[in-house]
Image (cartoon, rainbow, N blue to C red; front, side, top):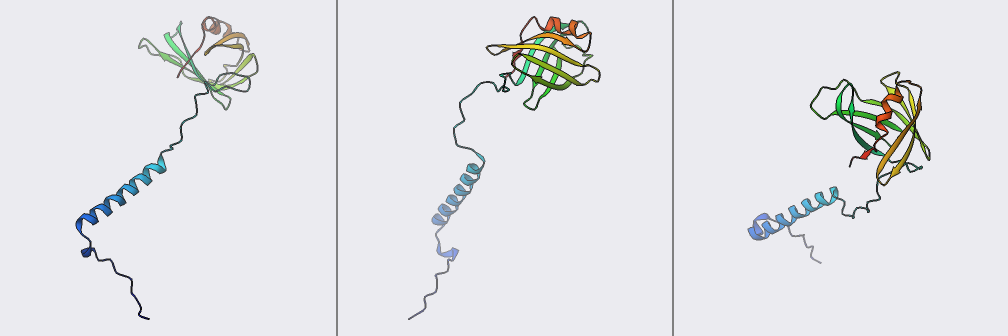
Length: 166
């Protein structure tokens, strides 16, 4: 029996047209593989609405505007994270310089109460609030605090709801 050697592919034996088609197909396969690896083609889940805690308290960022006696017209943003962290960030709305820094701490909720404990700035204390949702608006009502000046701060805040930031 005669031994047959495999045919060696010599580039000179392939026409330029065939070579061009093979190269293009190879590039298309590489490109498609790279794109397919980085793009999830499954359809996104339907929008379930705003995430909430087990008690239905909304997570995410909420804002309201106010006239602050010390800082003028500001937008105050409260953010509630799923890890129990809370922040309050003021934004100047009239180009003024703010004499306020972001505030951060933790929060705890149950079916109708919200407790905010401030870590920074130190000494700002812990405040208690009632909360409720009206569609996507968050309403808070100040109950008490270990900081006596909190009542004056929260009174004007409680007159309007917190609007979600998308």
